[in-house]
Image (tube, rainbow, N blue to C red):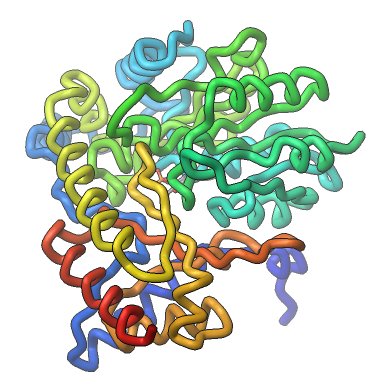
Length: 399
Ligand code: PMP
């Protein structure tokens, strides 16, 4: 029996593979410090859990409209407008089972087979997977190290545009580098979209995970709301990754299609979970401060260790919960020729499990620096210091 050809074009999140290797190492009795997975080990705030329990007791256990319950759609429109200075209404919002489905639905609604879509590399691997699975052609654009972390290589980005380019995926507050755009960079991306009549997917999964400064959305720039889809999610902000609750913020013609795709795919996002989302937004700042300060303490603990580790250079991002250090020199010190070998030996020698740059897209030609990605959201500050202290000793003792 033959399977569909398109499966040959379906990628995955290879970070989950790293989890398997780490779990296997742990099952042999070794201590593992899990820096590989972008998940949060903090519990979802109790009042959000209670709201879901109430919704079940109140009988919200049947289907609801495909686009989601109206009060939640309204609350999300308000939340987006307050934080981004936009003017969305309920007609711009469809509730989704997480942020991730917005990537697929965006491509399903704006991209024809053979169309080209620009995507960040390194970047969240699902972009390229879904572009290709749905018959499009992915065109990667790259980053260059900058004073504050990483900047888009705007010349490279512009050089990737052709007559077939239909859309750009833009992940300001970026996984895996932790970088966020400057005002000028965001404007340059908007300009590119306007000049070339591109749709934009603005992946704002980490919009509220910020320790200083203020997040901004490309959708708030002149002329952009009508061509931009925002990926909105409860996952990181409220420690709700497993609940699967998010939304697509879309210009009107797309909202109806997103809604129809919901009807075709999942009928609706889990009904009672939507009431939990509503409770979360009714007092959105209640626990965010707590979650944010816990993550910030973890970032500082991780940065303190890594910035004093020989052979490692990094900046301290103000957004997301990732660090993306350059390890080229550390690899030379421990006599490691490639990133997979470095990560494997680091696990065995120190218990630190992490992803590398290669988990976030195929390296582009001319890349000569080697990077790893550490998520500090799933370990206590103490475990972070302990694990990365071991990493420092391993590298240090090899020099
Ligand atoms: N976009 C980015 C950049 C992410 O890192 C993630 C999750 N790791 C997602 C989207 C998906 O988020 P969700 O859990 O809401 O589907």
